[in-house]
Length: 202
Image (cartoon, rainbow, N blue to C red; front, side, top):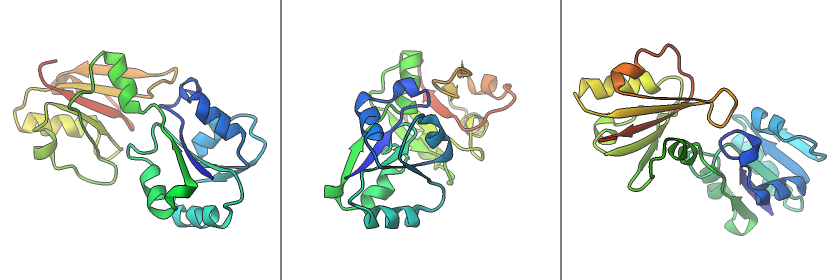
């Protein structure tokens, strides 16, 4: 059986007990460098996941007799590895253990419900901002190219009234959550990869 396990937003306290048990019982652990480093005292084999997705799938399909766990940040099915693996591995061989996503985490921190939420991402693409900003409640996983400042500029360009919430390093010791109007967020110096929430009437 192949497990796909969400590790939560970052801090190891947010891994589910089921996820911890499956990881411990695995023969092979596959994941990004930072994710592998976060799993301490693992006795089996570790394989780093980067841009080698086809090789990883080939390895998994050739080693079905082993207990393999693929670990991912957040929830594997929210802009994660889950979609790719589910398209390339037979469903009967796949066990997905959802994790707490960075989206869930930030909404819990600012005490806002996730009802009627539009979820999207700017990873490797330019969003259709007319469509994205037409929603009353949006959560966007961003990258280094299109992040909080670029989003705020698009809001200002359209003369829209939005409250912007930016979450950085969520669940880690250096977590930072900034809340303000687009003009306020533009005054903050540097952002890396963040989660951005856009709200009307906040």
